[in-house]
Length: 111
Length: 115
Image (cartoon, rainbow over all chains, first blue to last red; front, side, top):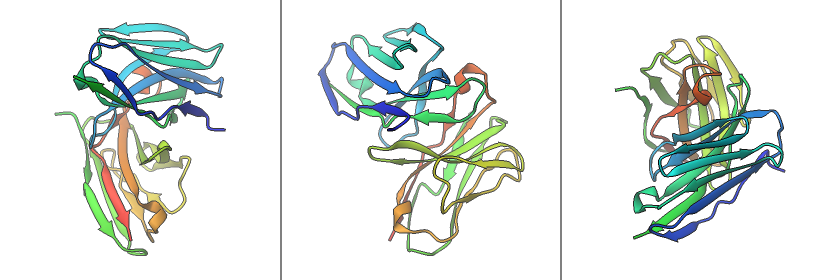
C-alpha cells in the first residue's frame, strides 16, 4: 500500500464547475499537507498548504484536511481553463524535510 | 529572480555512459533534493541534502550519487545509467524545515532517456 493515494484521473469538467480533488494517506505522523500545481513541461509550484486539520481558503481554492479519516481535499470554485494542470498532494511530518507526494490528478477544464 | 535551474533540460544517452545533471539555486536555501517523476508513481525522492557536505538517501537512491560541495549547487550523478532510469527529474530547494509548510521550489525538470 502506498503511503499516499491519489486518483490520477484524468478529470474533465466544464468551465465554471466546482472541482474536488482528493488524497488519502496512511502515516498518522503527517502534519503538513500541501497541494502543488504542475503545468505541462514545468516544475510543480506550491498552491495551498494546511498545518494539521482544518480548512484553508485562498481565492477560488479551498484546502481541507481531515486527520481522523486521513483524507485531504482541494476544491476549486468557478474553474477556469487556466486551471488545467496536474495537481499533486504532498505531505510531511512535523519538522521533517522528507515530503511524500501523491501520483497527481490531471485536470482539464473545458471552455 | 529567485529560481532553481537545471541543466540539461533534455538528454538522450546510452546505457553505461556516465552523466551529470546540474542543479543550482540562488535563494540561499539550506535544503535541496532530487526527485524523479514517472507516470502513475508521482514524485519520488532520490536524495536530499540538509546543508553543505550533508546528504542522505531518499526513497529510490539506487543507481544515483549526489554531492553538495557548495550551498547553491546539488548535482545528480548517474555513473552507469540504465534504461530504467529513463524519467523526468526535478531538483528542488527549500529554506529550512518547519517554515511555511516546508515549501519546495522546483526547477524546470530534466527529461532523461537512456537507450
